[in-house]
Image 1 (cartoon, one colour):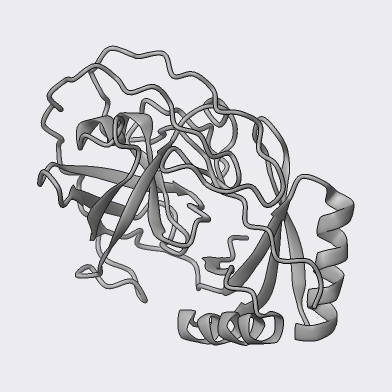
Image 2 (image 1 turned 60 degrees about the vertical axis):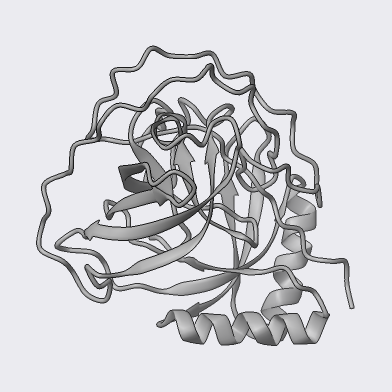
Amino acid sequence: MRTAFVIALGIVALSGCAHKHTARRVPVPPPPAPTDRSTPAPGNTRTTEAARSAPEPGRAPSPTKRPTTPAPAAPISPDYVETGKASWYGHPYHGRAAANGEIYDMEKMTAAHRTLPFDTWVRVVNLANEKAVDVRITDRGPFVGNRIIDLSHAAAREIGLIGPGTAEVRVEVVSVPENAPAALYAVQVGAFRNRDNAERERKLMEQQYGRAKLIKREGETTLWRVLVGAEKTQDAADSLRQRIRKDSHERNGFVVRLDS
């Protein structure tokens, strides 16, 4: 069909709002600039900026306080649990706007998730060592097929994730915002450094599936995400993802939440 969809991987830092961290800051070297259709490194990912930062010297993580739990909001259940691989992100996103509009601080307890509402608190348990940390969702990602959450640098340090770069984790919802907006979901089919290439992809998707848009993602290199559809449920968005995959014979594509 046309060129294979490009998936950009990366954001490598930490962010957050509650949960101040008392550990000393450790310099984290910036990863190399992303390129279209690049292959993700084992950890430290955001859309396509894949590179592992140097491991921090061993340090036992400090206990993490549990945030105040507001009343749960539909449709996210307070007993929501998922298991998969976690990564972390820092530079070049530290000091830049996260997807919710806040300035990302990689030394705060925050994380990126594809579909959970902003301001949802989740507990992330490293299944290799049973260390846990509570983080607030402030960003979108990771955009790598086998990863479910991107932690800030501080949160990753708490559960021993800095050295390995990735780990199998369990994500448990602790609380959700009281007034979470109604959800719409789309399929991210690519992320491009060149806006013209992204726009061509968007037009093709719009012609075939009726609706597609570009989302700008700031970083060391600006990336243009191509999102297709606007479905009311994750199941409907996943059906669209499978349809796109069948039409294009392309295995890439992720269901993501559309944020206003």
